[in-house]
Image 1 (cartoon, rainbow, N blue to C red):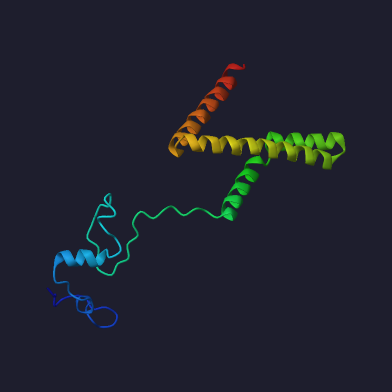
Image 2 (image 1 turned 90 degrees about the vertical axis):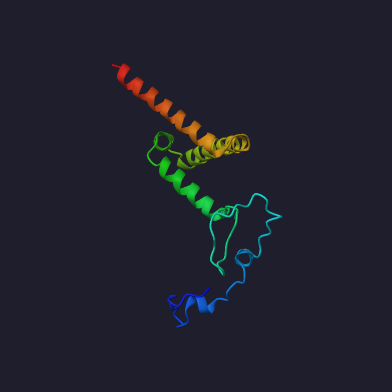
Length: 158
């Protein structure tokens, strides 16, 4: 069925004139999803009717970030978190007292690499056993408990 009042496209031809008219409503659904076989995809649910000619991506896997993006994000996050913290202040004081800044640099670098390795190994072990949501909730609860303990120490130390 063609509509006389169909909007004109940029070529001056109405959209209904530029598209072939399906002979049956069942045929239009099949032409819309040519690449999808319903027998092969039993869990596929059709949520809405899709216009013919529209490309559809079904259940596309989440793109994995490149190593450079992961490295950059990790570097910036850890770098900003470590500026001015007690580790940096301790390193500064040790370097000033020992008058051997390169030895302190190598020692503190080795210590930071070791603690980072422990964190990565523990994180990998946890990721294989728990869902990301569980890890997120657990981290939130642990940070909340640490905050409460710090507040408790502040108010009871006097």
